Length: 90
Image (cartoon, rainbow, N blue to C red; front, top):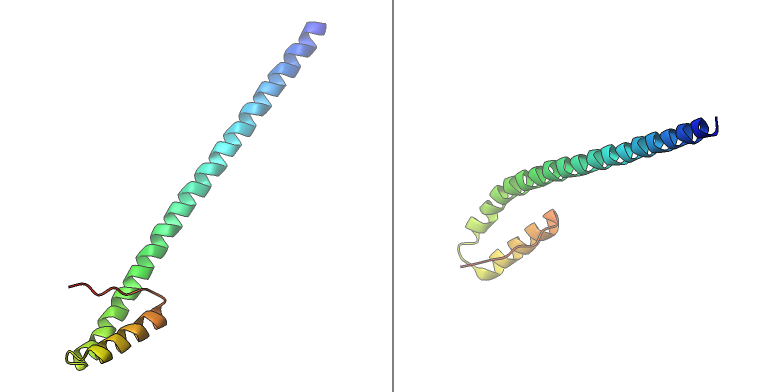
């Protein structure tokens, strides 16, 4: 009689621990997958948005006709409007 109570308690303890552990693992997987998907989606949308705005920036750039001050001014305005950093390379 005493032995049955201990067996049931141990079985219940092990089963509860496994269910709890599986719940934690499943929740962690949902969070990881959700975060990766959202980050990828956001990044893709941000890149597309900046690409469109870069194409719009080309008009003032071409109108500057190589005047450094106008180009820098247009580039600073573009960076401020789009919350990004610009780097000019040669």
